[in-house]
Image (tube, rainbow over all chains, first blue to last red; front, side, top):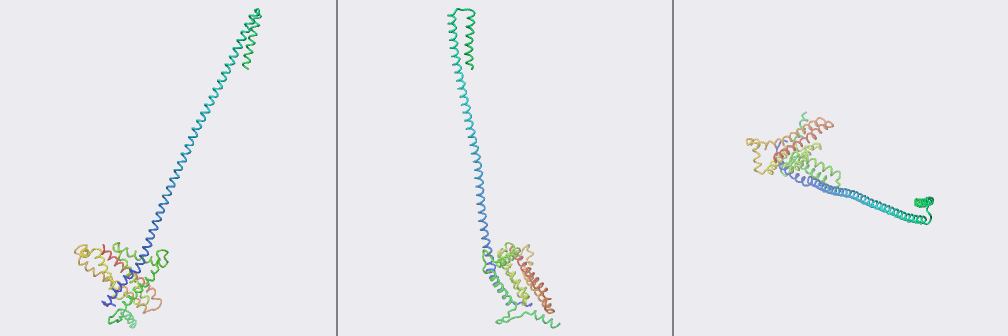
Length: 167
Length: 224
């Protein structure tokens, strides 16, 4: 019990040292090795997951960017189309207005020519009448009655011409 | 009463087995048995370990080993981390030795020779750790710290530490053993159970804790 014995002491020490070496190598070493290996595997998996996540993020960003670009492009296209349409519209309207103007001018000119022609005809008729009247005056004896009659006749004829023209 | 006392005295006697003219203590045989038991248990429990899809047994063993490792790496400080396997082995060994009385075998740690061996190994390890980290010069210089006047104290400590470790473990286990013997001498059934739980398991494991924690702290101090 309270005896100290050097032989037994050495026995216990040797025994313990051997136990320590074997335990460290075969029991704790084995467990630690497995745990380390699992840790390494986990780290590897974590890294690969992080990589995949990064890739996915990158793709998403790219996609968003392209989507934004597409939006912008479509807006641009619509704008361009609108402006082109407006220009086309303006051009067509301007042309139509010009055409209408030209037609109107043409019509007015035609009307004026027609009128001039009629006026000319009228003048000719009046001249004829005047000549005829002058002839009659020359032929017949002139008196206040005849003068008056002549005058009336002239007026009547002239009025007829005027009326006809106005009609 | 006479018979009672003589039974206890008989129980306290260390049996000595004569092998080849050398008297081997019963406790040495028991520690050898404990060592073999520990190794076999360790080998059986850690066989067939896999990195992936570990079995429940593997997970249990792993978490136990990790717990033990963390338990010692704390007081050992990062510098003394590599001595954790030794502390783990000693902890398992002393724990088994202290609770061996439950199986009807006298605890080997009630033999002074065994606790002395443990304590001397501890102090040798502490000094080796100091020499390994600081070199011989640094180790010798550490005896002059924190001031040269502390030299005699530091040298005394070299002997006081193992003696206190040895005697604490020995005294506690012996005391528990004597009390258990006395109780069992009076009543043999049921009554010893709660006492056994306290003296064998609780006190036994507390002594393991104290012994290993103190050794860890000495190592941490030596490698600082």
